[in-house]
Length: 145
Image 1 (cartoon, rainbow, N blue to C red):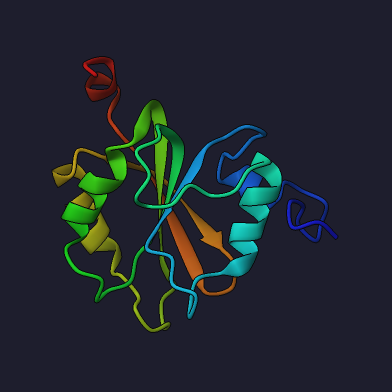
Image 2 (cartoon, helix red, strand yellow; image 1 turned 60 degrees about the vertical axis):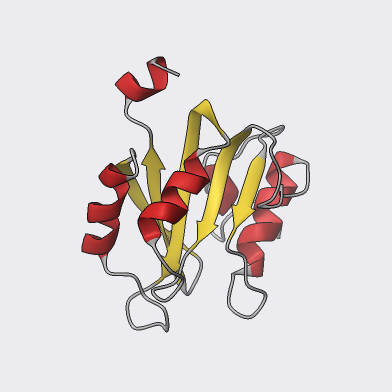
């Protein structure tokens, strides 16, 4: 079975993350020790291109931000993550699920996002060990860019 379809034949993970053919996806905070490789494979398969590295200055449609509790200042990371986003771009903040090492409390995300100029729109289970929070710039802020 392809990583782009789930076991019930419904939309695959990359599709639920909003990835389409040609979508430019940047990855920040990847750690080979704990990031979910199936997520990465699904995104690459669906987009048709490799993930853009965190040092790129390319404009991107989606940022996958792998984040753990001890990774530093979440506000700074979110501000940096939204920098290369296209006007309609999305940041997916991926953090370990409850009970996993590095879990980030939901209220930490809820406090950091607006300070960084982002709004939470939805959450998603991203594999066995990771949760995703979809963050976007408010419409008024996007129209001023």
